[in-house]
Image (tube, rainbow, N blue to C red):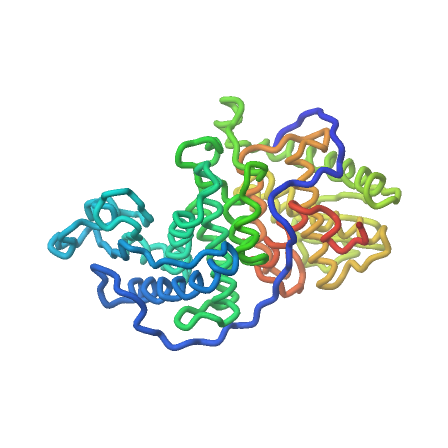
Length: 451
């Protein structure tokens, strides 16, 4: 996030997706584990068991969904499925090689779908079970199933066609994985299940799976930024496989980008803390003045924006880190929090401060500021603000590669802390979905009466 000058219309909306729905899931009922499908090389253990169950459920899901969405009958993968532990390989287990003839060691720290005409075991999924076990330890037991769902998405593309570019192909596979995960979360799968809390872990896991910050969208093997991949997954989760089919054409916007200067690369796009606070102080009132005038048909009065160190102003609960006081029209942030959040990145700090600032805007519109509806709206409106920074419609700041990834990290890491966002009882997954909704569709989905 850096200073700049530009003038563009505020009402521009990104072409990332169609409708956004914000979901509240109860825990899906447990289902008995089935025998699943055959996985060559699999051993008894949680990773192979979960992968086998997921693959069987994926076959069920796409046998139902492919005809409904693409008008084609699902044909099972001809090459099958392979589990490999590169540190403990008996090559006799794989007499014809793993997928497409790859050697087992080529699967190290990887999972892949392959399709190669004339190759052995073409149209197959291969995975390193020890690598998936490590992911599961860090990001939840559902991660192996998510990886299977992503790779299965590539198998679907092999049957119906892929978007073309690497980044579009990979994020569409994330979208397909999201649509299947929603089906699992609703209790439709016979073998797999997921708890709402695990959705937060899944989104956290995508941080490990993103491209390095600064990767070009045109890179030969580009998979997408953290925000791109999470957005695609949630798009499928919210709107189903139809959205994955329809929204990954040439006009899709990807937020991944390259650094433009050596200095920006060295700083990883982060402004010094003091400069960052100055940018936030200038960009938030500028955004809301224009939002009120150009979209909401009102006149915005800038609230007082104050920082404090450990103890909130008298108008707020002393243990709150982000505050809005309606009577004083005061927005405050604890620099103990923002100093810590700055370790994520500068735009994580901007995201944090923008949320109570959005409550001030709601107050001026005569809307609630102290209930769950207000928090939902404020997070969504913060996504709208982030979109205008990204679109360069705010004249004082410039987005840097990785900035939107930092917003996702902040919401996942701090969103459930009552000292940060109060007692809204929203999961990180829901908060990211709300932010994404505002980013993609603007004020009309943020409950402020905008058409």
